[in-house]
Image (cartoon, helix red, strand yellow):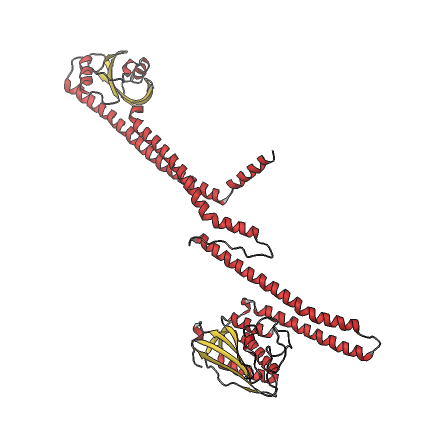
Length: 485
């Protein structure tokens, strides 16, 4: 028994679906159009035939008057005989003459339309023409509907008779009625075919949306790898492409979030373990041990605080909406960064070997942040009193910022991983990663800023020959086409 309500629920839901509503709208519009077109054509054709019948009856009045005058009859019988003989009935017509209270004259022929034999109709005609007026009307007689005209005929010195012309309305309107019935049958078949085709087409057009709903139902907070197949190039397909792009962004965001949480958990676990271990082993009665443990704990906590700040900075630069490009004098920016970087270390010699004198549409604050990060990296990992160069140049339609030092350099084998988050080397003095201090987020922030400008960051280094970091930005904006300042 429970299956019946469930089946009814599914059917009701199907009737309320977008597919059903689209199909219903199509059928209603098509049906209304067919009814209006067919009904209008039927009414026009019917009125045309009725107008022709009325014209025929009016002409019968004129012709009977002419015949009666032309024949110059001596008696009423002669007049009516002349009219009946000369006004012969056409198809679906009947004529006859009434003298007194009976039908007196009927034209010869074998027609099946004989209203002169209908006593009720004859009595009606006599009653309507009792006043001597020509009467035109519609009646139901002889098992059909008729349109008729009754013409009183009078001959001086004799009685008054009536000449009657009758037209079978049903017979005259039969072709129009049959044509309308045929149209109704064809319209019904066309609506049925339209319904079948519309149901199929609507299903095909809406299938991406149905797939979208099913895919969305399968997506969970931990798995957004599902994608919808794109078929065709219409608006619905474009919607599918847009949704797939949204899912890509969500997948990337979730992947980054998971990676960030994993990295943060891994990076915070070490200092927490160190502090906890030293606190557990600390001799509270030994002032020297307490002091050493306190210094170590504070140092680890400071490192954790720096890690949190770097994570916050990285999250900030990863937000595209925070980038605000403005026309910027690249030469002035380069000199400004060099002046700020010189405050990082007075023991180093700061230079700008090359400066690009162009105006570019960039975010000066973010690029300054990236270049100062590279400069701080050079101070920490280069020689203690060497030269650090900060340059800018335009090459092959691209804007290049470089920060170089004369330190021990970086092993080229780690060039591809040095910009990864939380990446730190094992020590200075030509070691692969240029030292293990810091949180390992500085170069990741540099790369994020470069990518936010549509470019990238890279390392050019060899062991014992210094390191050169390059921020490469494409000059695609009209404001970045090398306008000299």
